[in-house]
Length: 236
Image 1 (cartoon, rainbow, N blue to C red):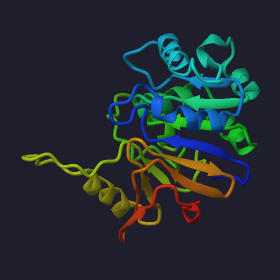
Image 2: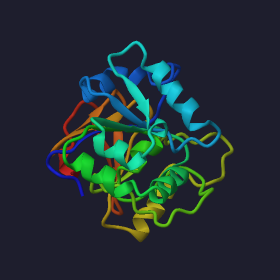
Image 3: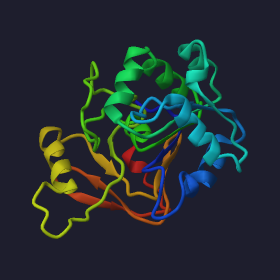
Image 4: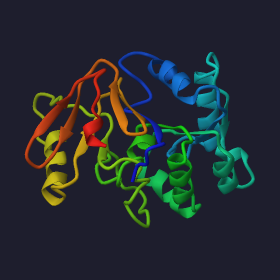
């Protein structure tokens, strides 16, 4: 579970509206990383190589003060985590990401580093794994991790890319219905759903929703609105 020294930036998505890759999150990331070299973990990528994924992030952040190095460039991923001054995990497939972290024995290492105060940033799948489990991801289970249990850096589930939009003629389950199914089986665990263009910023025991769109908290009893730019620490 989260500790009093954790510093987390949990971004819903790598893009917002029609802006470029990570454009909307640059200022958030610069403030969060605060000059530290960023260890990037590209393991959620499926149709892109780890090297190319890191290069994509480096290019996106080239006009910032952030220096990015991919974990794939280190001889020992475990040592890379131990030495990291800041950690970021990109989006992609959450099941692939979590499975790879289990395979490489990195999950507990990352958890301990972040609980000791190392800044952690994630977007999409990288945000999803900060929660208790990945049971509220939007992704297809194209691989089977040893467990759905994730980093447990916060005491709730996350649902990035949240939308309540329902296209005309659509007859599948809505996102709200899917999250209600989770709450039916796990009524004691809230789900924080964050829209694209927003992020949860956590500093120790304080949490705020960044951006200009509301977020939502799903429980078995109700759906509550999170006001942007307002404190929402009661969910920590």
